[in-house]
Amino acid sequence: MRFKKNKEKNAHRLMLKEKRENLAGYVFVGPMLIGLTILTIIPAILSLIFSFTEWSFIAGLDKMKFVGFRNYTQLVDDPVFITSFKNNLILLLVVPVQLILSLVLAVIINKSVYFKNFFKVVFFMPYISSIVAVSIVFQLLFQPSHGPINQFLRSIGMDNPPKWLADIHYALPSVMIIMTWVGIGFCLIVYMAALQSIPKDLYESADMDGAGPWTRFRRITLPLVSPTTFFLLVTGLISSFKSFDIIKVLTEGGPSYSTSVVTYYLYTTAFENLKTGYASSMAWALFGCVLLITVFQLYGQKKWVNY
Image 1 (cartoon, rainbow, N blue to C red):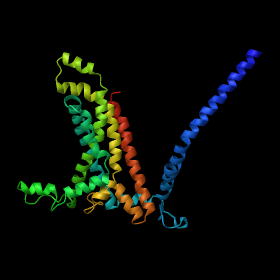
Image 2 (image 1 turned 90 degrees about the vertical axis):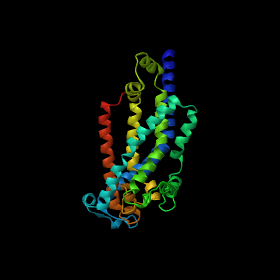
Image 3 (image 1 turned 180 degrees about the vertical axis):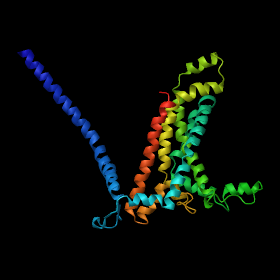
Image 4 (image 1 turned 90 degrees about the horizontal axis):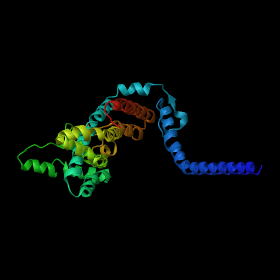
């Protein structure tokens, strides 16, 4: 009987301990869940509802008018939205360029360069710098009349250098150059961490078998950093679709919508033209596009990512 009572007491203590641990877990997770619910889940549901309405956020809810899928069908006939979406697709080219350059730099720095930490800091600085400050610096560099870049081009004999951000043909490529320069640092740091986790005996075995640098890179380095490449590819494409701040500061979508992207057009539609319902439909169309690309990547990664 005494043994049975002790067993029951121990079981009761374990239950109380487990309840306390669960309660502590809820206490720590609770603020995050509350914030996620209030700041993300509820606004997302409301924006989905608004996307089927004709409404402005400065008007009362009684002014809301249900229009069905009209906002979504209007997107197909909206030339500014189509142009902005095309620009978003062009900006996706920044991601593979970043990955290639950062991987090459990571391999060189990891293998052949002293003061690795110094170069990590140098390349990472643009990424952690304020995008507003970076944009202002490049506005000065790309200034058509007195900017350092065009002054250099004139000094080597080019009479009519590009107007860069003021030219519809060069504005988007200029933005892409800046985005590439800013993003290389993050990819470089992640790639260097991946390279340093590769066992050195693999390279030593390859050397003993007579493998050259290119063979070692293609047969060892690329397969073993493929999970890192996949991670950077997914996050890079999503970030590219979310580009807003650099467009807002540099060009405000101009000239002639040549640098407008969906997020910037969404912003102007919602907060300048006060078309909350139409802007919400843009947000969900963009979400659907990003989700589709992400699912395609998750499916395709089985063929080239080595875990």
